[in-house]
Each structure stands twice: as C-alpha cells, then as structure tokens.
Image 1 (cartoon, each protein chain N blue to C red):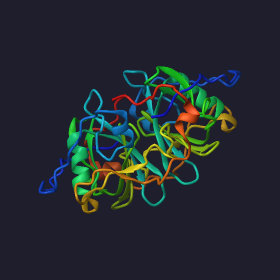
Image 2: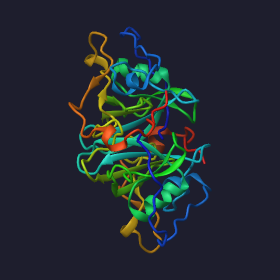
Image 3: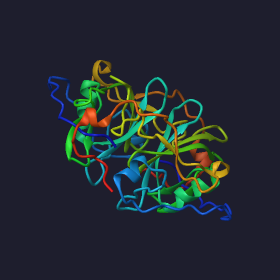
Image 4: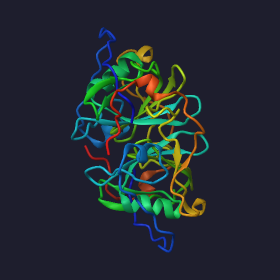
Length: 172
Length: 172
C-alpha cells in the first residue's frame, strides 16, 4: 500500500478505452477483447514490478477510471482504498511510475505493471524501495521462532520529509 | 487464477505458525512480528513470481491455513475462491511450486512468493507458463484499437490432458 496523493491532471484527449462485457470463458481466456472483472468494490487488483530487476514493488488496486488513465497515459494510476480517491502515483513524492508493459491475467481479474520509477526509485510510503522489504522464513529457513527478517538495510528516503504530516495509509 | 486440486496431505508435525494481533502501525510496518491482515473473506492476496526469471506467474489468495502450510512446508498453498477449498498447487498437475522466498508487504495485507515450478514449469490452468500471457497496449503502444496482444506463442501443456473434464475455474 502506498501513500496516495492528488488526482491526475493529465488531459483526457487520448483514445477512449473500451471495456467489453464478459460473455464467455473462451472470450475472457483466449480472446483479444479487454473484459476486466471488477470486484464487488469495483476494483481490480494490480501487481507492480520493477521493469529492470523484476522485484515486486507494490500491490495496489484500480477502479475503471484508474485502469483507463493508466492505459491512456502510460503512467500508473491506482484507487486509494484508504483515502477513497483516484491516485496518480508520484504526484506528491515525484516517484512517478512509468509503465513499460501492462498485462492482464487469464480470467482478467488481475493486472501486472512493469514500471520504471522516477526519483530515488522508491515505491513504498515507509521509505523502502519495495513494499515487500521483509521476508517470512519458510520450511528449513525457519529457526528460533523468527517470523520476519528485513531484506533492505536502510530506507531510500525519509517519509516525514516527503509526506510531512499526511496521515499514514496503513489501516490496522 | 489456477485450477485447484486436492488438499495438501503434508504431515503437520512442523513448528506452529503464530499470527500476532495488529496493535500499532509501528508494529505492522517496522516490526518483526508476523501480523497479517486477512480481508472480510478471511483471505490475503498473494503474488507468485518465477524465482529465476522474475516473471509474474499468477495472483492467488490464501486463508490462514494456506499461509500456515506454505510457511511450514515451503510449497505454495492457496485458497481456491472458485471451489472454496484449500489448494495445494500442483497436486493434480504435478506443477508444484517450491517457494524459495516468501515476503510480506508494509501493511501486511499482501504476500509475494518467489517459486521454482516443477514439471513443464507452467503455472496457468489455460496451459500457458504465466497467467499473464496477454499484454494491454498503453500510451504510445496503442494502435488500431487493438486491446490485447498475446505474449506467449504457444501453450506449454494441453489443459484437457492434465485436468480432463474438471470444471474451468474462471468465473464470468
């Protein structure tokens, strides 16, 4: 989850994006029509990876408008669930995500963005490069009851300097 | 989404896994306690990537039991939303996912599995290597109204041979 920010102000003179109705499994899985399945909150889940390293940077959600703007502008837009606003990633922090490739999965209920991040290259509101900065030891890796292990030695930016006293988006 | 299969029969003599209560933002974001947030369906979203190539293979969901078994056994377990069963990935197809690394994100409501896949290396019930076998052209990539473009030239296995007449898990 990320610290949301201002709504995108990119001009809407781009080609419109059409979402098709979902009519058959063959159409959805094997077809060339974009027919995304938005959930009961009208959202589709979105995975963001670093286009170069392949590292997963964050997991977010998009509504129809966010997906449309991402397709039209080539910059990642999400729906902020904590703030309930359209969120042009990087509008506050400068850490814009330029999308190199957007993919959709077999049943079209998830998307994957391969991005290049501006600025320091960070994507996490806590200050780390990736939101996934802690490892859970599994199987033979487990020892002494350790549950989480940090994978990034230090933060790439100071969230207080970047976000000031904006409320933290993490919900308990 | 994947074609679910039998419940894991791995023996439960492993160290127990403790999920902590979520008491503060500092604990959740900066701490070393595993305190996952399961959603209103008691699920946590899970990203699966190929440990070698970094390719996103699938997006799935885990309940407490699936996450526990993944941590204990080092093999990916999910909750099948279409079948409403615990799902030991690969139990039918042989395409078991051996987890090299499990990570959790800042607010602990998403996990990321880096896996090595057995057999043909496929992870998608449609027969492709990755579930994300179609690209959505964005920005300057868009032309002639094309909405989806295939990124894998052919399937890695024949789903009819592997799954027979099991119902397709895609929900319209």
